[in-house]
Length: 406
Image (cartoon, rainbow, N blue to C red; front, side, top):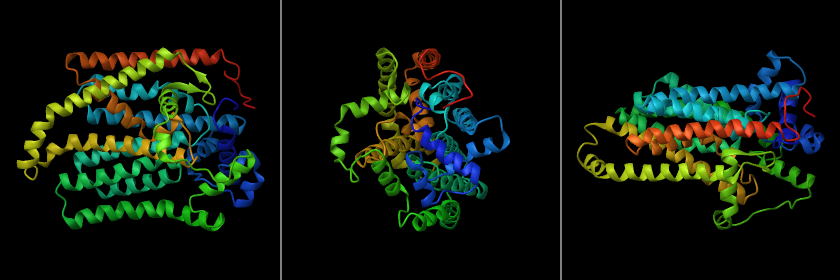
């Protein structure tokens, strides 16, 4: 646990819920001491961990909980498999998406210990799949109910999941527009999503308001407990401009998104990060290239054929939704860093994990015949880095296979 970021705090919440089958109160959190600082935050990110603890009594809860993270990770990979088939016509690109998630070094690492990031990643991955299907095939009552429920659950996992809300709104609007829903039909689906969302998560925020003296989100209580525990200032705020201009902040996010282990202390070889950056830069160039090539056709379409053939909007709508998800996620990370609610941690990008990987693969594929080879090169490189990181950590003190975690 000393090498798994904040697992002590995650484990405290998971264990409390699993043992008491209720949410912790303010007194419980205070009694939890340093390990209980995550107690005031949404606790439903540990649902997979609690379920596994109830059906898989194989030993100490600290070990069992990690299988909950693996379960959530599997859900994200499955969502990537089906989403790849929806958005890519190339079989290589379609299969590349789940394989990238399966061997993403940092995601593998985070899926290996108890935390709520894995659940947030899984839920957001499933939601993005539903958004794609809604854009392509329209909404049904069942789909609207499911979207509303999963959005509500996401709100109760980890606040980095806010990245999924703007793309949810965009996807719903685009879906009803593309499929020519009447105003009455559109309002029906929006109300179903909104009402289900409110019923799913509204009770928790009301409870938090009462239990934690008006702290609806629980973040103020968490921040106060953390500051007192570690002798930090109770008030902390830096200008957004300072965060945006901080090169170390951005380089740490990039490196820790791909693979930076321990408490941001176990680095891979620098060449690995530069290679990932090279793939990213190439994908961005590919995306710009595709945008410039299609801009003239798009301009003509928007002026003449928009109302006549809205199905031509399906593909742009999907990629706009993915792009907005990533942009919102990054913006939320910058805002959180300015308020000291989250530092430069690549795992905070996992709510848009599936969108990032899809955009990366799509950008690389835009180089004609060379494109698929670039995608294959990325996949192979990623797999090799994953195995390399595994063997590196297996020879590092604090890592290995054990049934006694602390």
